[in-house]
Length: 299
Image (cartoon, rainbow, N blue to C red; front, side):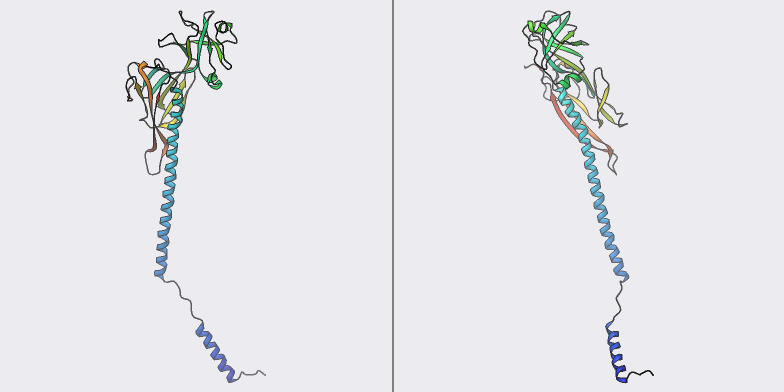
């Protein structure tokens, strides 16, 4: 037999279920307008973030390409400044124009000890061993009295292990110095102790690049050796300018008498290999420096 709930209990249960039904309310959803506003806000924020990322990426790319262009110019400047400072003014420049330069660069100084077997024996002052070993002897230049230097091209230099000629004439070869025999010899009359220097010929030129086809490169060649690309690429407006004796301004064209050239202005405009996205021209870096020949007679 199943017991039936009393009427009192039924009334209490109904009241409890009614309160529970009134307490539980349905959750409110998202309207279409709210959804569209949220999507619009997210779109605006996303667009701003993408633009910021693209802007930063372009800025970094620009800096990288500008640094590359500066490196091209500075590497070339540092090399040429070091070599051109030692050029002797009266005969150091062999050929010159806006896009090429040929010079005699001294690399060892010394003095004569005399003549032995048809050769001039010279004692050289100590010089950097790496520079001396890598230099390509192209000739020598000597100076008699107050006259300018006389250059002897296509000469030959033979090392001498020991020579009593220098000692007999009161000339001591210092440690890390060197003894050489030069041919052809210095013609008489000349005296013991005549100053001279050995030089190498170096040619510079702006020519089409092999490493970066279609662009301009600075080439360097030491007489007797291969031509090498020093740096690439350069803008086509890169050039050499020239200082002449008695003129404080550099000129685009060298003087007719190259013995009056006293310095060179290096106008190097390095370029990046590629242009930035959205541009057709590469980044440029203009570097200009003047170098004056230190090996020149005082006025």
